[in-house]
Length: 284
Image (tube, rainbow, N blue to C red; front, side, top):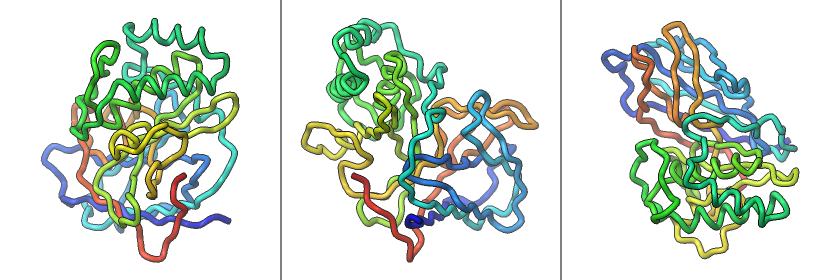
């Protein structure tokens, strides 16, 4: 049995905003590194479980609870398990479709690289060459990197990376969760990375971390170029959920999100805490 990692997620502003119809929370998926073994909701919560449309392995909870002063608690078991191919099936939508400007490059890589591993390495090198890391939140639009160097955060960088992998026929997953840098016990944001299958081998890639922390190249596969802890809270860009009041689309799903009557959502500021007494291996 592996080590256990307990994460507490609390809303920074524990009050129901005007006009919000519900609160949406991700149900963390299984990965080759983690398995959710327990989820504890605040007292008095009532919720409904939803599955993403066309993507049964991603689920969410929606609640209309009013008791928001207490935190949710997740317990993960750290594992080293074989990847499940279904987790890497392409999830094509407006967020992940390859733009026309990158098609010639993708065709060139496909013709020049004999193996999937080599194709991945070429895509990594290209994506890293087109970005300067900037933590400013993305607008969600697909960045045009065919010509100019762009500033981008982890969402921007990994969206380009993922779309190129899909276009090359490489099965890949956009994973998003919490990253606790070094031994820090708290985080208040989110981070995303890409996991994939290349010639049957599971690989994790975090190109944005190399750019953000100015880690000396070459960029290597693995979760963290710097020591840290992370948990995956959801999988895929553009997940869509159907509930009693209509369809909800979430571009990237990690923090709890307020659901508005028109079906749009906005992030609920939160703080994630690693609970005392838990332990986990650092990324490699």
